Image (cartoon, rainbow, N blue to C red; front, top):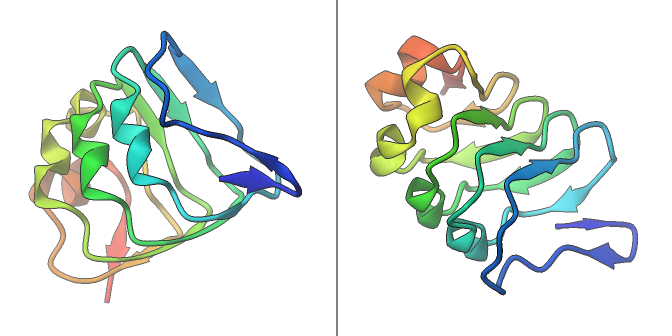
Length: 116
């Protein structure tokens, strides 16, 4: 993930609880190392210029709020994504991305995602 030349390295374990970087014109893909942020509670990367597939390691997160809408994410949504607490309620946004069908039920029911 980067905003111009400012990379975000999620490969080091830590105590990040909130990652709120919406509306920052960030480009790139969501790194698989994001799944290593074991203390993360809120992942908010909405309305950036991010693209590519969601990494399977995203399902390792225990976030209670997840905002990834308003980007250009594509591809299949990992089936284990329903293990993320945020996907069971209203604090999940994946809208305006276009994922491959079929979508996991939790995404259809709670995250406003569309597929093609």
